[in-house]
Length: 498
Image 1 (tube, rainbow, N blue to C red):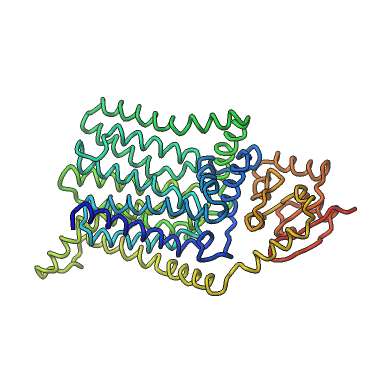
Image 2 (tube, helix red, strand yellow):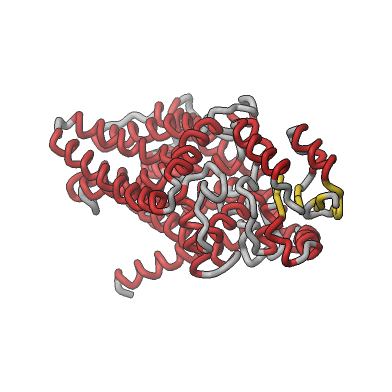
């Protein structure tokens, strides 16, 4: 078999493994689980669908995620409607992710050890992916691409696959995507830029610094210009800047969930990578640069994950850190430990680096074992018991209770995301998601909502749990002016008093 043919088969198998992984673990989007829906996934899909129908993010629907993420969701909906479109973009993303991971591993490791890296990636990521279709999952290729470009440069310098300037251009594009999606995800790109900057400063290559900076800015402009043209053309620049930046920053620094042991325990990967990096004893320039990269990577990622709240799927962004640490251990220490064993030396001798390796591997595998096993069991249960079917039927039932000619007069006060995805409908109000929390962050939102209810009262209101709505003024107004028509697992339906 020729080397080219062998390489094609190798990458094909890696890509297929990624698709099988997302097919099995993404319970909110995979065809394997037709009745399982998730609130966040349904909202992101709704935004993508809304864009394809002429709606404009932030102007028509309020949210704080950046527009590029919604454009990516819209691409899936444009190609294939409904959940198959979501699953399509997931497949694209996971294939790019695992192929880039594989290429990076093969820079340093043989095929067998690269397979080990890939399998351990699946093992840990399975625990963190949640139900699928999140920005943390879909934009992983940008982070893994940054890792590859950085390690390829560190290892090969001028013989790297891409020149420094071309790599900087790609990094700029990636940073732009993250900036206009969720800026805290750019930790890997920031780490890569800082690492290369330190190397170039050490080498006193100031011309390269200038050229790379210009290329990075060019890449950022490649993303920025179309985004601003889109919002200028739709008269929504102020809405976009407020929601995606000012309001998003307010949300990310509103620590309504205090720091906790659980929060910090989810950062096991960053802790382990930092400890292992500190214990590295580099002997040459490449190893020193790799150590710098791992240390910066673990610290920047650690800091970025302290903005917002500790939702488990946020910690999926640690996977590049995990992969880099694992590659280092397999490259630098497996052979050394193997030789120690062959020569009769104890690998458990009081050596700080050996302890760091043991701690890094065991804490991560033990730490994520239960999460991964529980997620697998949960997905098996969802598949066998058709979990979510009753909720899907309930959402359809609520939808059918409203006459077709009155469905453009339904006001959503809370949740409803699954309701809209199941019925392939769009909300008629601007704040259909996270309303109780948003109106506390910005009192103007409450004013808008109360003005709508008082002066242009909708005939119908849906709310998942009106009794649990976290604003007494809104709740009292609904109870005083609307009657409960239906209450099931999907939504509560209210009708304006005659």
